[in-house]
Amino acid sequence: MEVSQSSTSSSSSQETEISGRNTQPLIPGLPDEIGELCLLHVPYPYQALAVCPQAFACTSLPRQGKLFVLGGMRSDTETPMQSTIMYRATTNQWQLASPMLTPRSFFASGNVNGKIMAVGGTGANINETMTAVECYDPESDTWTTAAKLRMGLARYDSAVMGSKMYVTEGWTWPFMFSPRGGVYDINKDTWNLMSDGMKEGWTGISIVLEGKLFVISEHGDCPMKQYNPDDDTWRYVGGDKFPCEVMHRPFAVNGVEGKIYVVSSGLNVAIGRVYEEQNGGISAEWKVMTAPRAFKDLAPSSCQVVYA
Image (cartoon, rainbow, N blue to C red):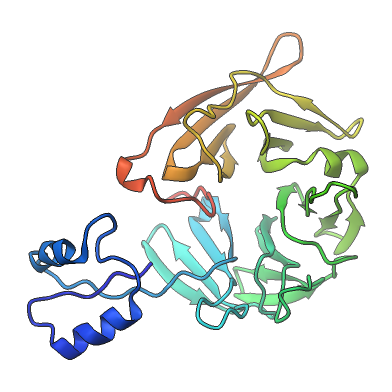
């Protein structure tokens, strides 16, 4: 998002240059002439911010307090990027890390045993999916190539359980073909096909809690399901229904220490707790944290939990 620079000492040439490249209002919801009067009383000038790239990927090392923003697509040239940007919660600072080996956008990423994986996505040709996979070591600040995907996958969702990363491209209209998916084993550096039951029931955004895979579906009233690897099936989670009356798509989700954190449009947050009932069933209870109305036009792109 860009915000125009405004100060009492701004020259007419500066104002012309800035207004020429800014197509957004000075203050959303206000006419520019009123926004300018408001900004004139701010004790410091606003600076134009760089436009955030699209189609980037985020992952984190929670206990180390590190957040990684990878790749994406340049807003000016619409070409993929290979940048690696790291945020440290302990210092509240961003810094550049070694770039990825391959520029990519619309790809999957995840933290597997402390290593950052970048999987698939699109490269220079946005109409083609890549099979290239690479692995980042935060200790040495280096990227290395990993085993390639067996086929190019369009990014839909991914999850990490133990030493394995699961990537699925999900169902696509008109639902004539079963979705495709792959499973990466970092210990063996190999890819295998995802089981039929797992990929066909993976119909939403995923969360991993205590080694168990859950999905919040993107249809209807957003029911939550748990995957059972023993018989390759999904079963619905009981208890409270997901609070759809407050939480509206799109969603971003993460899970940590037995709790699910879902961020929705408007940046409302739903915190879920999953527990096992006496009959062996799985249930959930939800608590909603409503965001300020100032955030009503914002939508999440990623949800990460890091410790300061």
